[in-house]
Amino acid sequence: MSRSVLKAVLLVLMRVLYRPVVEGLEHIPADGPVIVAGNHVTFVDSLFLSLVVKRQVYFIGKDEYVTGRGFKGRLMAWFFTTCGMIPVDRDGGRGGVAALMTGSRVLEEGKIFGIYPEGTRSPDGRLYRGRTGIARLAMMTGAPVVPFAVIGTDKVQPGGRGMPRIAPVSLRFGPALDFSRYEGMDRDRYVLRAVTDEVMSHVMHLGGQEYVDVYATKAKAA
Image (tube, rainbow, N blue to C red; front, side, top):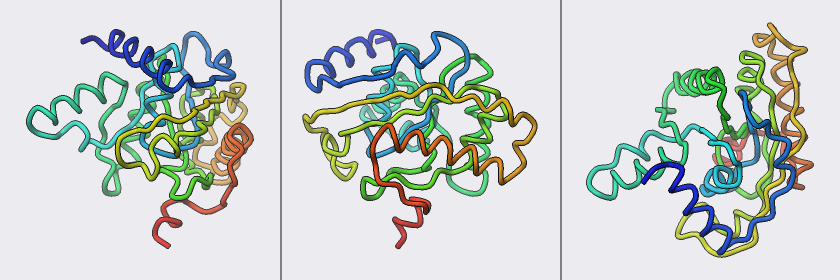
């Protein structure tokens, strides 16, 4: 089954089962490189994002999702790659570099790259501090950033585990953010932080989440 056919089938099923409310989709340009950056509540966020955006959205995923053996492993690999996931080994010190280079390549090809600046799923439904990779990517490529928020997916898949449930889901997209004024400053940590915080501020207002100014990984470890 081709990617377009799979997306069409899933979109029909999603509309019938979830009837998602989508706002601001017009803010995503019809062509050219775009970064869509938003909150990350649970595993199915990427699925809903890929299904409601008319253009294909590419995003980073753990390589373990596509390295399984047997029929189940091959089925999972086919499903995730068809939905736009690009497998990257994110363990170790080079994981962040690999993700950054992958995103840059996708954008150079004029495609949409989806990213969750928090770096991992929220441990408690709140919005956590963004990692500056989003800022570096935007400044390196010059691509506009469209902020978005997914609402309700924590009820679809509580705790990020188990089979998805039926619950109301909304996705809100905000106007594109242009950071071209910072061209050539992608090594300035103060600028990187300011750009990242600006993106997260828009995500917070779109989704209405409580903001926590610490990294989600630290909250999980606490």
